Amino acid sequence: MSALPAPQLYGKYGDPFRLVEFRLFSFNECGGGCAHCYYRKTDNRVERYDDVLALATDLRANGFQLETCYLLPTDVFENDFNYDIFRDEKLRESLRSFRYVGLASTLREGYDARFLDSFFADFPGQGIELHVNLIEARLEDPAYESFLLAQLRELRTRYAGRIQINLALNTGAKHSERELGTLAGFAERGSDDRILELNFTYLFNAKLPKATRRDLLRGSFPLVRFLRAEMSRREPALTERTLLRKPSFVFKDGRIFLTPILPFDEYLFVDDPAFTLSAPSFDAYLSTYARLQAENLPVDDDCENCPELRHCQGKGYFMAAHHYGLGCHHKES
Ligand code: SF4
Image (cartoon, rainbow, N blue to C red; front, top):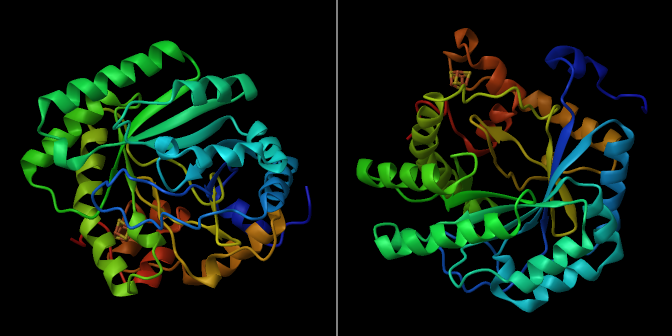
């Protein structure tokens, strides 16, 4: 292992599990029309897959296991040229070092079996983690639920052992009690992990004023709290995942960002140079992390005596809270 610029951080948070996620903004053109999608849908491309490969290789050399490489931000099945990126040799080599390739789709017109068959033939060692975005306008339509569950059943049967499926939702709406119950029902019946993955699409849109992004993020907290309470009935919702144990890197517009985590356990995005890596390397990651620690300070008078302090701190929530001007995520609404 190379010399650590911030060795005390490992001492502070304990031995990391050393898992890592990448999020690559490469996909384009999407007609999915999901509510609350603020993603840019053209001109997404990661021009330097050599950076992806370099960081993946260096993290492995430093003992990290590469868990999921998500290819984002649009629906993989919405156009054929999304598939073109799989021809890039550097990307192919990178994907082969991950356990899963992460993809998203609404499945509004089903799935492309030809693409999935060819993916699994090309990448015999990898699984797919599929996030299926719920179409909010159709949540109360019984025909929608039957169609969706039938698609999921078919995918699970056809690609048994190779595909992990969870339902997903764009945050940004305020939900009534009844809608929250409906969402919980979908997650229960449709997701392998009985959870709903949340997307914070507005955080990735630099054209939205920062105050708008903050308000939308703040407005998502009741949903996060509801889902956390649902999960807590089955198992502890707060994991030991931290930015050291399980960092996530976003590759977007030629830059690499380290992304803080909102407990429980959603990766956010902060479009600020302070969150970027100066190079695709393990040392650059630790330097960024160490620099951000200066901002990772409690945001509420209650933090000091709060049982969740180590989670909020270890996951880097305070970094994001300071950037957006937020307080405790339990109190914000
Ligand atoms: S932000 Fe809220 S949950 Fe986190 S440590 Fe502070 S008081 Fe506790």
